[in-house]
Length: 77
Image (cartoon, rainbow, N blue to C red; front, side, top):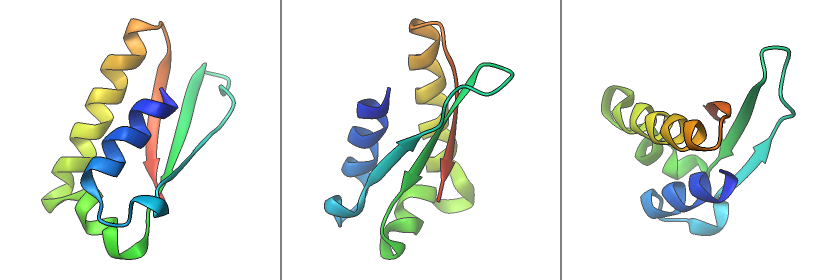
């Protein structure tokens, strides 16, 4: 799942070296939180107008997580 998020993010940004993903341990509700870090100049590219790209990234991650019986959340830092 981490590789999926990194691949999606690197396809969106200009500074591909600025993309990092950290993963938290599952919380009490068994949700794994992925933190996406990008360069400040690429933040708008990842979020998109009115958050549409960020929402689409979250939808793809949730769909991928259901295939491996996980619950995920994506936070863009």
